[in-house]
Each structure stands twice: as C-alpha cells, then as structure tokens.
Length: 111
Length: 112
Image 1 (cartoon, rainbow over the protein chains, first blue to last red):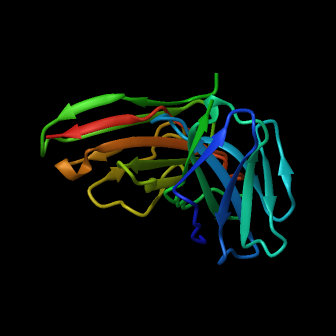
Image 2: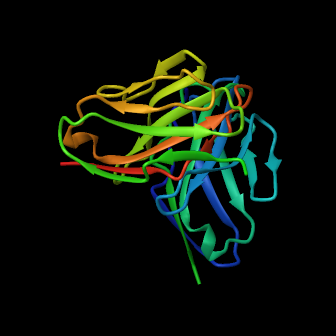
C-alpha cells in the first residue's frame, strides 16, 4: 500500500470549510483513497473513499487531483464536534486486507 | 444495532500473566482486524483475518496471537504480556468486498 503524508495539525473556524490535504505521490492505479476520523480515543469512523473521481456524501467531499498524487477532504461547514484526528490511507481495490494508517492530521475547530 | 464489541474495555495486569481481549461483531463480516494505538502514533495493525481459519500478520504482530474459529469472534491473545504492550487496542470488521471498517470502542490495556 502507498504511503501517505498529512500535516500534523490544522485549525479551522467554526462554520467555515475545513480542507484537509493528503499526499500520496506513489499511489498505484488500483489503489483507493480512504478517509477516517477519530474523536478523542474512540474507535475511528469511516468518512469517505474514492478512486479518481470526486466523491461527496452526507459527511464530506473528497477531491482527488487528476494525477491522483494528492487529495483533499472537505468538511463544508465545520462544527466543534468535527475536532478530531483525520487519517488518509490508500488501499488496493475495495477488498479488505492489510491496512496501514499514518499519523493523521489533528483538526481543531475553534469557535 | 450493528456493532463491534470489545471486552474488557479496561484492564490492568502484570507482566507474564496471559490475557485475552475478545472481539465480537454482529454484522456477518468476513474481515476482522486488530490495531494498537500508542500516544502520538497512528493505528498500527497487529493481525487481520479474511475469513474463518484465515489469519495474517499486520505490521506489529510480535508478542500477539489471534484465532478465528467463528465468523463473529476474533480474540487477541497475549501469552506473556510485557510493559511495552501497554496500549489502546481496537478491533475492526468489514465485509470482504469493501474496505470501510467498523471499529469497536477500544480496550485500554496497562501491563505493569
């Protein structure tokens, strides 16, 4: 699985969009980008995933660059409850298997 | 309610005393996995299982054992725990055909 690089921390004002970047320059053609978040020490929560097209669900949007070497998770209207550690991982296909999480980005949403 | 249940949630024990952390899921998922999380570090995978009687090592399997005799259960066994296994442990499951994992609430293990 490709290695990912994320900034260690970011701040965002409440009500504004939070844009979390992820670099995955060695991603292969069959690898998907997944995002999870972990609030305090709770179990991580799946957010969204994509291959090459932009994706949107009720939680967030995922923008993947055309060369697929980086992506951005967008929380359109961040709330205080979105304060968490956000993990970007890349996985081969949609099949479960070995899974490597990086160190993630700690997002702090401020009032 | 769909869930992954870990027990115990908290445990303080001593070096060398065998322990088992249980994990059970009620979603009929084929895939199950164990992770550990240490301060300042992300999640590191210990073992995973693609189905009954099929297990594979993750990134940090040393000092741990697992078994998958039933689809719903995936216990993590520490035969001779040591202080460096003090950590927060998470169990996760997913269908084999997708990789969005459901995580349990975690087990905080302290080994003195």
